[in-house]
Length: 496
Image 1: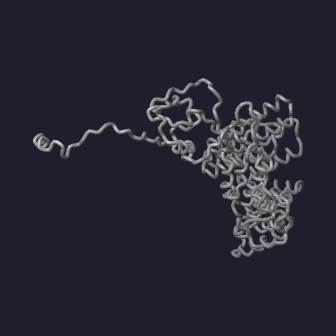
Image 2: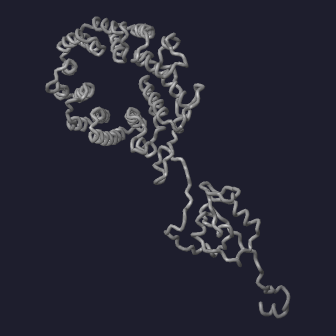
Image 3: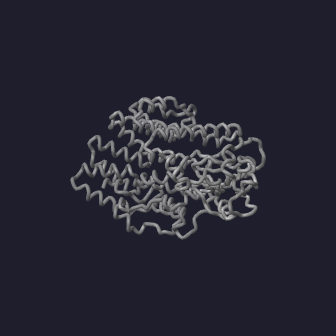
């Protein structure tokens, strides 16, 4: 039928085959991953052919202004002689689609200097400057952001401390605040100094010594005023403590040792991972051994003693974390593996003994404090006597312990001795004498958390109107003169 129709109408409704029509070449659409407009185009693409350059000049200028970046195309005006993005002659001409299908292999020979993107590394990155180039000073502006620091609410402070005339002024320097025990005001002042909120300019981001010292004051004071939850949030700004960002040219860490030890503890609480603290303490111990070896090579006895004490302190801290993890068996094995130090400080020896008492091994606790051979100083004798009294209390021998505390009180006027003496009076049934003893310590200016907690506990055992006595106790403590051990208290100190 088609043949008959075509024979009857030879020229009607018949498609005429036309000649090949010259079409406009398809414009190249480039994306961020195309290589036609990058500085390495001269290495990746062959030289373009002159016969294929049929695009308009306006379209070529539009393509030259599109520079692929990390977030898509950005329209920029090309600057002649710009050192950031040097262009080869081939990059200025449009490349036909067929020439991009088979790019030649990239040569690994150093044909010329390649451009590098410069950036400022943060604390979480390990980027360092190139070899031979002087390293720029690290930028600590990430610790100067106001959004890091939280406001401190006075709601957990008893009312007698809030309007007291002993509250410091806003212009009091931070060292004076610390010396007078105003830890809450010191924490606020440290945050204001870091952010420039107190009217003074913020520190120079390159002044790492000042910034890190203020940051340590902030975190330490937060822990002293029972605001550890806020400290665990603010310590996250440090990120990785062992990052290359914090290491100077000599290989030493810029963060002070005290801040690193505190940050390890707070970061472990923040991430709810105590194993993180154990691993971080071992990292610090590895560095301490290295510094100890360097001090021994230089025959620096004071430096050797410093790093030896720090290493022993880390060993005790690891045992404490294992106890908090309820890994009592691991804590026992770790404490057993620690070497005895003849010249160790009494504080570390007492810390080890208290850990053994917490684990229930009284005999091991008694063996922690032994006077060194040829050393019979009064300090060693005092430490040993205090430990024996504590061991008697752990064994439930309160009468014998009370006799020892009374003998110690005659040779030393110490708050710890008085508090333990009052606790022993409580357990032997002399509650009123114990309460009077603790109240006498408060009248003399002693206001530690342990003392106030035990005294308020005795108030609860003595009478049903213990809250009235607690409020009177807060007024008495607020009227005392400030001391370096802390003047302002919280409701938890008085069990309110």
